[in-house]
Length: 154
Image (cartoon, rainbow, N blue to C red):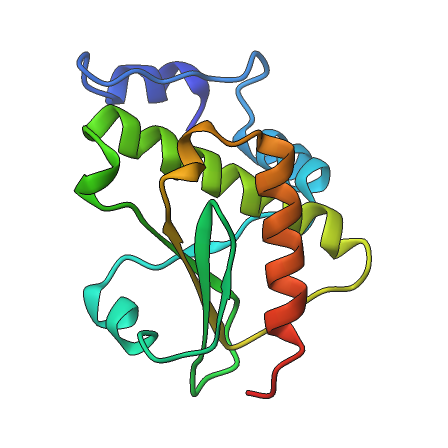
């Protein structure tokens, strides 16, 4: 399917940004090469969050990082929790974006050292300091927490 027929097939309410040459495979391949191993799976289900309640954790002023070993050897997964005590939806979403970006950048820099922890779920539970803390400090805390918790046996 070429770019023009795809534009006609998509309803008007949806917006589609097509590359100039109309080739999605080239666009996806370039994005994958640039990003490296920086993407991660996100935990969505409540049962996965509850399974990690009594697992080892790392505490920082911005968040509590919990590590839960799963029975499979799948990819690392990350979950983000921000309670309503933190503020309204805008504040909570901003905190989640900051923590998500902190994990993204930490994985990017740790991938160069060969960091990989298959079959593990990491959950970041936000604290009040996450909203106003400098991003570089959050990034350093995420790196330190991931390295410290990955040393523990499964």
